[in-house]
Length: 150
Image 1 (cartoon, helix red, strand yellow):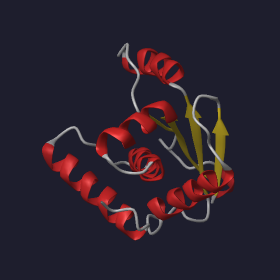
Image 2 (tube, helix red, strand yellow):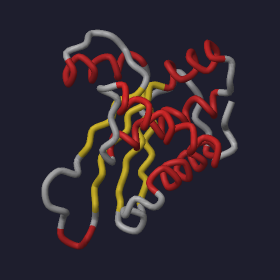
Image 3 (spheres, rainbow, N blue to C red):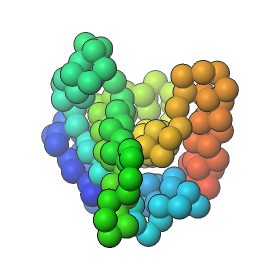
Image 4 (cartoon, rainbow, N blue to C red):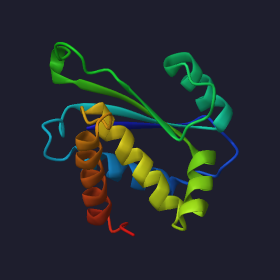
């Protein structure tokens, strides 16, 4: 599995320890889902302005958000077995605000947003109450495995 990390913002520090940990978070989120060996995922860290522009362009919503997922795995797998699952774009400014608001660590919040985004890439959603409950249970289970539960 390959996880590519890009930091396109300067407002919130992203140290190598956190970036390495988030690669492990991605690996844990897709463990047992059939993509472990051949998956490619990009984690892209941005500021509020950047994610606001993406949110407007792709969702028609003119405001910043915390995380956006752009799934690429539709149709037939690529030759060579590589499964380009997609990109998870996270606003580190939003993560910092939400960590303070919810009273937990920045590390936990960014891990949660990473998990949430990756689950979207592999087909989870929260459009209905049942989908929301299933996705939330998976998120909490993963956070517990990573020793980041509340």
